[in-house]
Image 1 (tube, rainbow, N blue to C red):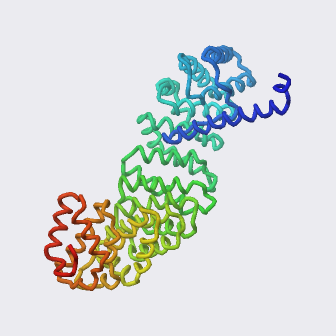
Image 2 (image 1 turned 135 degrees about the vertical axis):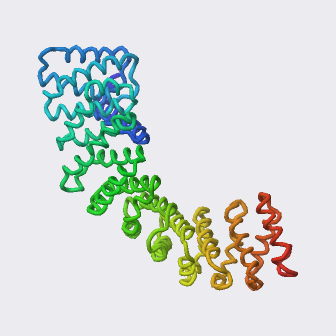
Image 3 (image 1 turned 180 degrees about the vertical axis):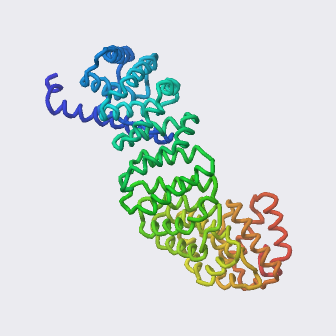
Amino acid sequence: MASLRTRTNLSEQCHFCSLELKKIRDTKRSQMLSNNRLIVVCDTESPRLSPRSYLSNLTELYQIVNHENLTPFELDFVLDKVLQVSSRRDHPPMTEIFMSGLINKFFNLGSNMELPQKKVFLQILENITAADAIYHKELQKNGIVQFITQCAKEKELIPDTCGCICNLCLDSPEILSIVMKSKLLNTMIAMYENIVDIPYTLIWDIRVIVQSIRETSILSDFVMLAMNLLDNSDESFKYKDVMYIIIGEICMKDVSLLQPFLKKIVNMIVLACQKDSSYCTVALRTLEVITLKTEIPNSVSECIRILQIEHYSTDLTVKEFLLKCAVNMINMARTTELPLTLVSQNFFYSYMPRIEQSHHEKEKLLLLEVVILCALAFKCEEECFLDVNILQFIALVPMNNTRLVVLSLVLLQKVVSRNVDIESYVDEKLRMWFDKVLVSKQNNTVSDMAKALAMHIFIEDQMAL
């Protein structure tokens, strides 16, 4: 027993408890963020209490607040204790009654609170609105909108005010409408002379609201806001990743709003990839959405830049996103200029060994798709795509990828229909690939295409069927 009382043992126990609490807090934070909600995680959060002691603590706090003349010290004490309780996600029954009573008392004291006390109260509101909408009616009855509007005028309170706005807007269309009509976020952003100082919660609010609305007029305001934040900030601006998420959300809803800025957005994303910025992957995800929705300006030069970056990149995720963007750009191209340029610049000479040697299935498939789509994009009588033996890439297409098998058969069909002499381009690998297509369990459409091609593509001794 003596050993249990030693300083070392106590230190180890404290360290262990601290780690356990950290795990709980980190899990809680990740759960909140996964639902777009914001929460204040209290470092001083007490260990798990029994329901009886938990409720007795709340009752004691409620009785203190009921005093007619509450001293500043007592108010600080109660606010701190309620903040610790508010960040819990496992309230025992009846907690809401006490919490609602405490919140009502705090609202009555609101005008007399000092700035630090208002800050703690806002953190309490942020936490209780993060869990669900159970307190919303009570909060609206107590004038929550007027309170957060008043707090938004104080620069020190903006981060915590934004946490409340975020959680309230997710559950209350009425509050969302009020926040949008009053342009509260714009007012708060205007209070920061230096963009780098804008708090994370304010940027997050923009994201949440953009996800929640569809009105073009409101979204267009946020486009300007996002572009200003990206334009006027340097690498020290920590939240560029969220700004690109916001742009991606707007693009999904109405890509036409981004048309005046597309050239600039694409250029910024490509530069971010060249610099290997921390937000590169998020920016590329946004570029993938943009290229899927519309043809970008200067698509030929931008696609070449993208494929050049992809060639030298060592990050597999970045490579995949860049190739997806290239595939989208080739699909979106209204003319044959892009595929012709890629072929004429011998982009695909290095692709054959890369595909054969790569251990990453996604990378191989995307490289194949880029090549085959380029071959399909322009007229076969020019025969320029045959200069790099693009037909040989077909032999690398796996049987389990129906989309690429169909594209490959369409390409062969196109070559035959133009009476292009392909005899010199058919090697043993392509023969074997075609054999596999004929005997594999493909759907009826693919099977019929393959049989039709087998009837008149490969004449005697050209392919062993």
